[in-house]
Image (cartoon, rainbow, N blue to C red):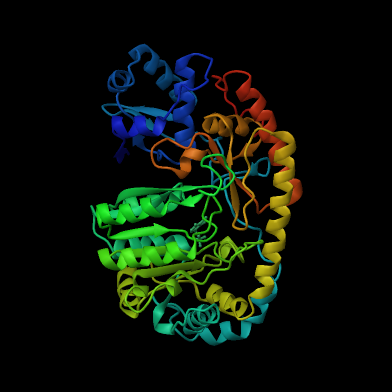
Length: 490
Ligand SMILES: Cc1ncc(COP(=O)(O)O)c(C=O)c1O
C-alpha cells in the first residue's frame, strides 16, 4: 500500500548537497544519498518518490542519470515499483536501521542513551508489595498513579519550583508527552518555534500535528561554527521568531540541548517566558536530559522557575527517566497548569489508556532518592566525554570536538560537508551513526556529526576506530558502491 508521497521540492531539500566530493559517477552519489534518507528515517517506508522526469528537471541533470540511481535503489531493495505509482520506498531485509534490528555485530551510536541503572532490579523487587495492592483496581488512570505524581511534584519542589500533584501528569516517556502536547495545545497550520539542530522525533511529532516549523539556531561551543563566546542561542533571533510569527508553541531544550550539549543562560530563559506570555505561546520545555550534569559551571532551576506570576504558566515542562534510569521503563511526565493537565488527560484516550502501573511504582520508588542515580550518570558521562575527547583528538586532529558540560552527546564539526557519506561508510565498518542533517530540517548540517557519550570507554574506542576506517574511505574516493555494503558484516 502506498500511503505517502514526497514532493519534488521537499525531496530536493532533503537531498542537500548530495554531489559534494563524490568522485564516482553521479548516479551512485544520488543513489547513496537517497539510501541514507531511507535508512535514517527521513523518508519513511512506503513513500512514493518524485517521478524520474520531474526530479531530473528540478536537479538539472539528465533523466538517464536519475533512472540509473532509481534502478540502483530498486536493485538494492530500497524501492519497489508500483504500477501507476512509480518508485515506492521500502527497507531491505538485511539493512540495520536506527532503532531496529541492530544486531550484536553493530556498534549502535544512533541512540544517545545510557545502559539501565544497576539499582533498577532491586527497586523492582522493593515495590512488589505495592504492586500486589494495586491489583484490585482497574489499573487505568490517564493522569497517572497518585504516588508517582506526588514523587514528581516533590522533586520539582525540592529543586526550587513549588509544584502540586494537580500540576503533574504521567506519560509513556517524554516522546509521548511531546506528541500529546502537539496534538492538544495547537491547531493544524499553527507556527511552532523549534531549535536547529534539534531532537528529530520532536520535529516529527510537531509536523504530524500540522505545525509549521520556525527554526532558531543553536551553535555548539568550540565547534568552529561560531566565534567562541557566541555559542548557544542567539537572543535576538529567538526574540524575532516570536515577534515575527506569534507562534502557538515553542519546543525548546534549554539544558544540555540534544545534540549540541548547550545550556541556555538565565536571562534568556526569562526573555523567552516574557515573549511567550506576550504572544500567547505555550513553551514546551523538554527537560529529559536536564539533570545529566557533568561539571556545568552554573546550575539552573526547572525552566518555569524563571517566570513570574504573569509568565511562568507559559512553560509546560516535560521530564522522563528514559535517560537517567532506563529508556525501557517508558515513563515520563508533564508539569503544567492544572487546566492544561486536565485537557491532556481528556485528549489522551484517543491514543492510549495510561501508563503501565508497575513501571510507575518503580519510578516513584527511585525518585524518592534520586541523587545516587544522578551521581552515577555524572561519573559515567564524564568518563565517556574524556574518552571521546582523547580518542577523537588522536584520530581526527582536524575535527572540532566541543567539551560539553553534560548531556548525552557532543556535536562534532568534521571540517567538511561529509556527514552523510561518513554515516554510510560507517555502516560498512560495523557502526551505525546518525548523520548531522537528521537533526535539521532541510538537508543542511552536513559538517556535523552527533557522537554519544553514554557508552563504555571500550565501545567508544571501537566506534571511533570504525569511524576512522570509514573516514579514510570517504576522504580517499567515492563511498558509493553498487554492491551491497551489508553483505560482509551481517
Ligand atoms: C531531547 C529528548 N526528548 C525526548 C526523548 C524521548 O524520551 P523518552 O524515552 O522518555 O520517550 C529523547 C530521547 O532520545 C530526547 O533525546
